[in-house]
Image (cartoon, rainbow, N blue to C red):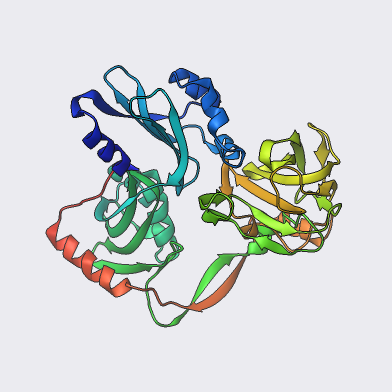
Length: 398
């Protein structure tokens, strides 16, 4: 939160402060971080049990920002735990004590124009010329179904408008490509891009497009209970009724009676089967594809660490252990170390070897769908793109 640093600099002498950007070290624990910054050991005890569970959600190599004085004393630190929330550590003035909070990440968003001249292919050339991997991926995705990329030749030109969120001046999160012009020799094609990053050459009419069958992905995963009743949904930031402030809810809560069997949503290896603070009794399962599932507040655990389980196997029973207002399952799902909305992946059932398994084994299940393309602001962005092309001055951020 850049503004916190600015306010601090008003309160304290400017010459005594410096903002340092670094990355969270791999395998570093929160306690090890505190020790390395000479923060008193009793600081962790001042953090509520509800907030302590977020300490394990800091990801390696995430950018952190620290404000230090000329004696290298940590005054403030901002450590992200998701794309919208971050840990805030602040030293109290004229004291050795520190305060802990979880606050929203403040982003600035800008609109930019970029020009890429083709030497090899859109992805490689964008990455080389714009130096932004996420943007290269986004651009490639937006044009792949709109034009035949094989027809692009050396010297052809791609111009596009995109928006990018920045944190403390650095590009973060996935940029949104808004409009693209592809100029191949004497022919030019305009591409309108929707919120999902898909590009279309026409608006206001029904178009055919090739979509991956979502069942191919969701067929891997079933539900963690046989009877589903969602009581609280996934959110990067929601109002916490007990703490009276915003906190992430990195999972989906399912209401169920105590003792209801919990089912593995997919085959995998048990990586955790024990008590975990406010989560109570917890089981974690490592799955293929970079996924890991979490089942919290169990009354009784039915598996052991290191054990391999199959999809639909009972791994425990619903309970209310840890910090819980009543019997329920808090189910979390991570992809490559990042919490994602489980309901975007879970299928309808948690069953073992069925016809769904045959679908899962197919690497790519696609089908033709039709939809009417109406993209808000599409014509406006085309006008902006044409204006930017005339100016001939790229304004992209690295």
